[in-house]
Amino acid sequence: MNEQLYDKIMEQIDTDEIVPLSRWRFILLRVFFWLLAVMSVIIGSLSVGVVFFLFVDYNQHGLLEVPHDVTDFLLAIPFIWIVVFILFILVTKISVKHTKKGYKYSLCKIIFVSVLLSVILGSILNLIGAGKTTHIFLNKNSFYSFVTYDSMDAWNRSIIGRLGGVIVSIKGNKDFSFIDFSGHAWQIHLDASKNNDSFVPELNSTVRMSGVFEPSSNLFIAHSICEWE
Amino acid sequence: MQNENEINKTDQELIIATLHDKRAFSEIVKRYEAPISRYIRRLGCKDNDDIKDVLQEIFIKVFININDYDHNLKFSSWLYRIAHNETISFFRKKNTRPNVLNLNAEDSEIFFAQLADEKDFFEIAVNQNDASVIYDVLNQLDNKYKEVIMLRFLEDKSYIEISDILKIPEGTVATLLNRGKKELRVALETKGIKNI
Image (cartoon, rainbow over all chains, first blue to last red; front, side):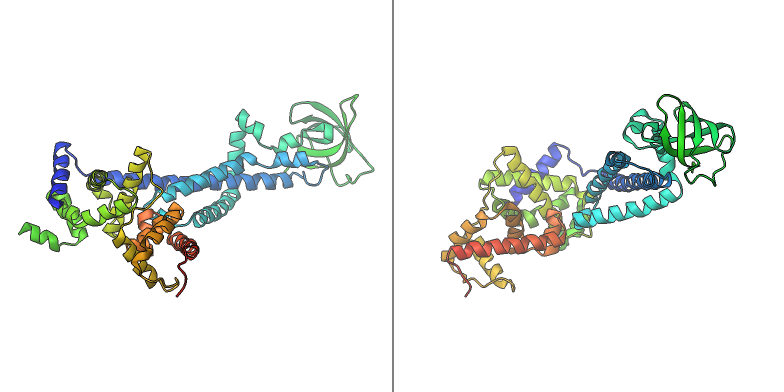
């Protein structure tokens, strides 16, 4: 029976001209999966970097200090980046599992290490400004800007008392003309009863304000004002 | 003379020899034909012609992918992995994956002996009368438990080997074996086989 099977196998190998697949093919396949795993970790890290940037940005631009509702806060959560992060963690998992020894590691271990690496690398990328650069670069894309929070948009909502833009002319310490981020012109009056004494308006400086606007005119009464960081 | 030399060669040496001379592959076939054939049958392939076809496919696949073999791995583990995948794929093609293991009297004897050797498992009398019971009980188990239990107790594979064959972490092998044994214990007890 042994001979028969061997004969059949050798006959098939000869007839079909079967030859072993090249070693390079397998090496390249493994390299491909390793590269995919590394790339996934990098993209996952970048998404964490942008998430960190957006959270810092949200806080830095005083959005936690001014009145805001739950919807406002929810809109600021960078869901798209969280989805991208989860997606690339899954790609990392699949690629690692396809490497030579990848099956030896449990799913939890792979996910834990990927998340940890992404968070560490993401923090570094955010520190060197990669999160901000990516956000600004992609923000030029209409779809991205549609699904992502932007601090300028958040301060371009006069209807709920937030206004950001550039001072274009000054009329004393309490009044100045102002162009907001969407290009509308405003007259600004600093409310003397509020704590605005320390602020001195400077020409061409970018500022953000919270206050109330007069619906009948383009006058905005600022309760608080500070420089745009 | 050449054949005698090949018999004395290790699996690894035979693989290297195959890359230079395909005739060396015959010794691999001879060495593993019987155990792999048994493994295919135990996985549920009953028809002898089917077993032969699957066996041939397995060895052809081994020959084609011989450069993919990782020499840090036991050759038999790699071969069993291919055999496992090819057999499952054969069932899938025929759309008739059996939910039963195909065990004979000899298998049952081995199985009882192996179970009795397990320190953490209760001892079971090695009794031919129990062969049909163990057969029924094994086939009631979930496929994932059945596969590891079969590799551990019938094929006598270590945890590392099972991990390499099924491409799952060693911890998962241990978990599946423990859960499988628990289910097996409960099922055996309901059939009247209890601790002695």
